[in-house]
Image: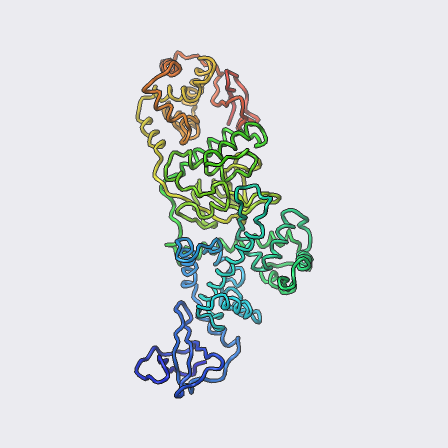
Length: 609
């Protein structure tokens, strides 16, 4: 410890080349066995925040006896959250831009949340536990292993007391844990192409507290076994299955858990998972607030365009109508999704990634189609998709963002990829639209703690979207005729096409204008008539049929003319909804929905709210 303000020189004999002055509470390390030369001793000087250490020589007379860890830890009073938070963001930026090897374990909000969970990110909590110090509560043994893994870096024992080196340690350990969990849980029974397991932030937190092997054992019991097993007993059982060098100190692990969550004498696995998930959710929200306060420039900007792939996803949800993947139609649609991303599959594999890829390809946007990874059917390959990453705690995640989730209980997939819809107010859950959700395509809810990544790609409006704007300014009769042709040209009779025109007219007449304003507004409103959806093959055919009209299109033009003249009879009994007879959409199951007509291949309804 420095008693006054000595100088540090470049070498033992040079008085002219001053490096710097040592100020009060600076830390100077003299390695054991250092030899004095001309009354000077080689040292390393550490600043508290940010800068690399400075090596040089000081007069031996300025040193007193060595001090214990508690005295050294007092130097951490210089911790500054306003510097620490941006540094966490910088690590994430480096990892995502290739300045360092890409690491799925590096995420600014998680690294900050972890420190909040362990110490509330308050310096007064850094040294409460003997042998542990800093925002990440690092022990001398842990630091020695870190230093040994990086012999080229200046990671002497005193660096353990500084926040920035501790952050580097936390990133390193989280990355190792992520890779270890991925390797251990990437098993032969995963039903994906070249499957890779996707750990969540909760997996990483459990690995930090319990060690990787014990965390995996606990997670397996929680997902597939008896969650009421006592955590302590599960840790002991995990030890018995491991070689001695991989066994953990169960008492120390339980103490670490006790510093994070409150529990009684008997802590079950179910309670452990629930409480740590709650603690993580709370910490992630706090981390987001700190990033917004200290490093707002790192936050993803709300995109200025919509997600064109969501139009395709909504269309597919309607197409499924709640039916199961085990049906013949379900298998056929799954095979179609795989085929659209260039994979030949029999329709029995996990297909959430194939569905997401299909929606991008069918969106009509070339940039999206080119953005797919080599294995878009694999959930893990979506972790770094796109050009923008949103923090899981960001309240402004846009609809359509790609969400990668840790797998559910009993799942044989490596993870799950889906499209974000919204946060559920007052809960720790989100709604997402995706494929392979309860064996169908639907909107499902998921806990925020399962999120591993939230990704986005900024794209210009698709050609199909631009086409819709062209039609919106065009002739209303033409738009109606194209809608009839796109929706009902396959109907066995004219009456079937007239019935679809009846629905359009009934929607236009709706007092509340729920379906849009005017005939063009009703026809072109998103997700109303699937032939106008981005990615629907009908769009190109509809554009072509205008130049080379067939008999069905000529008939549709005649029906549209009659509708505008008010001479078209209503065959549907006032229906505002219909669906094909081979699907059963959710709205059709509403207790107020009544079948008003069955015409050709379509079933028509009234009473749908």
